[in-house]
Length: 187
Image (cartoon, rainbow, N blue to C red; front, side):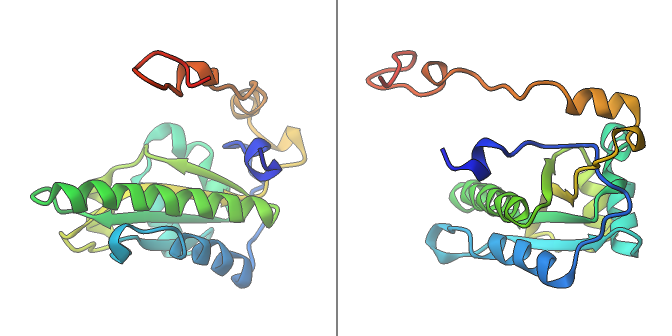
């Protein structure tokens, strides 16, 4: 597995003084823009805020308490939106797939630039739609925090530091990849 994937994890202990340059943030957004898209519909749209600007503060205001405890230390927040067409299941479902692909590519680009990307679903989607006057044909799906991991452990609150120090785990491959029928490992 490529090191960018193998070493990637969703940190919470960000350096609250770190910033992100225009070209770095643009590269991350471009990675999302160039993600694969079903039928070339390119449904992904993004609302982008940098720590200290009104967009960033409005995004923080939509977050649930747990994310609000650490995400304000990120250098940037990106609200990822996609199609909202519940009457067209294919567009609705594939729009979500496209958003996931865009998030994944943005996370890997952030990692390649020395940042950490942490995707979040813990925010008030209706409040985000209202705050940014998102048209009804789009829906907020996730927020991506982009920041530099704090190198000074003492600068990070203890509860966040403890969560970041927990081992990164996933289900074993034979429990998630099947062949022939559900439950039969592919190998």
